[in-house]
Image (cartoon, rainbow, N blue to C red; front, side):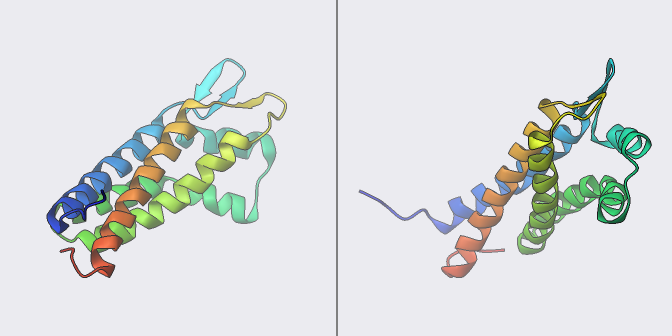
Amino acid sequence: MLTAVPARSRTTGARLLLCTGPAVLVVGTFLPWLRSGRANRNSYATDGAVRRLLDVDGVTAAALKAWPFVSLLCAAAVALVLLGRLALGAGLGAVAALAAGAVAAWALGAPSRGLLHAATPGPAVTLAGAILTCLGVLACASGRFTGRGSS
């Protein structure tokens, strides 16, 4: 038999996911994302290697420049959740999760190119953090839309 989850439990679960998800996401950005030669590079060091080896411009160049701000966005989202601003924290978390999740999913499916080979740990952990964050956003939203949640 299905029973309703109390609003307090849902809010606590949303808060937990909205703090854990972005933390996992940021940890993933520091794990290996790229192997070039014998070197493993995290997502931040990948920027330089990709620019030197692939001559990027346009949207790709803008995304590479904006990437370091994803972790700052995660930190702001967690801080807002901890300060009791659940809806605003969830909104920022959603933006960070969607951006990082899309990049991580792309990186997991990217083919090897010359000396560049995608590494799995960084993108996989980042994607897991993005999924956890999205689950927190959904838990937060379900409480708001049913009128039973609190911010």
